Image (cartoon, rainbow, N blue to C red; front, side, top):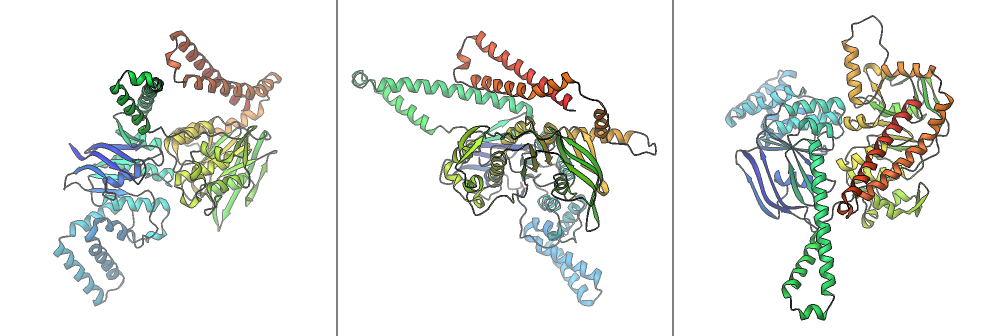
Length: 627
């Protein structure tokens, strides 16, 4: 049975409708993931359901007994008081009464004066009159379940702990429907896993927005997509959703092409002038007017980001060599006895909880911070592009254009000159948006601007510190593909498990007391290797990380002359294959491609498959030789 039903909902803020004829129903116990590009209105839809935005038209059917709670995308900066105060505030009018009682019990514990006992007795009486003892038990129960100390000051908490408290505030009313807007933003991996387990055990319905694909795969029972104001429901998993969505978009393109072809034919007919009028086919003229109106009202698909990395000169073979590196700050050990070698072309992920020192480790490996002990040897011919998660590189008061151009009118991308405005359009900044100040941009737009800056300068080392925050899934996957195919070296800090799995070749993982161990592969590979190490019987010796052992072995083996020639030729071969693949994809994207003879279509598809296989084999061979 549906606990909430939206019928023909419309919302507009002066321009094209953000939400147009939206129909949505959510059943009890469902976990629905809401997808869509940045700016399509996902957060607005949650606010409509929560009553924060009144729709321009349509109906919302919600049973009076249904309780709705929400977790905001950003942590409010004006929240003060203890954790108990913040959680209790989710109960509305009774919150002040519960806060007063909680503080009275604290005062009695600290001060046995008659005045303290009198205050406690007064608040107890008020709670009894209001019949609010059950509500106080609800707060205490949620605090216990969330492992929160109600007496701790909220303002002293980390970002991850604040989001945990806000989730407790939402859950304290025991809602039938919980709305979550990017709940994993700024959480570390441990906090994300904790949140997943909490929500998997939640009995109510969920409607959540997320860019974290691993989080979405684990939680969602249904996917709904908001695109150009319309909502489409996919009752399937994420992989099936991608396939069905591609099929729908292809069918839409074919239908639009047929419509445009017919419209063009009718426009030729009407331009015949006197001949058309003599036929007195007024119905055909009216039909043409209707087609023109329909074409004018058609909303085009949101463009894709067109990201290209400017290739820099090749760096030396060894990028960084660290020997017994340790770093301490205010007597706290951040990194202890780290030894590692990063070679040209390595893609290294750095994993650890918030506050562990991941950004500090990046600065040590880049030579920007001197270790307390040990040494770091940097390679030669290095040009570094740094993506800063704090966005400190952006001038809030300056325009998007000025932040990117730095006085330049043109940007050179791999030998081709491009005007700054045109380059920004590749990152979905329209000319008028490009002249807006940075302070007016959304989080996703700021990240796109940082990526535009990052990729506009030649570099052979990319340093990415939480690059995926606030990006929609489609842009995230494009970034993932670009980074995966990058021939230079990458140092990546990210809490996005799927991004790490699909990009990195090895991981540096923060353990307890500043120990940093190295492992082959991404996040899931680390978990497997860690679990295998824990399952082995203790021998009295500390096991070396797998990656370290393999590197030590590989360094003893010299590369042959023939293998060196293969290694030198592979980058050119890979570039040629990628160019051919791009040409084949463009050929298949032509509107009339599938209208050709069947044997011609099969021929192109076969060529595409052969090139993809050859490219995969070339990358695999390159990784073997580089190792």
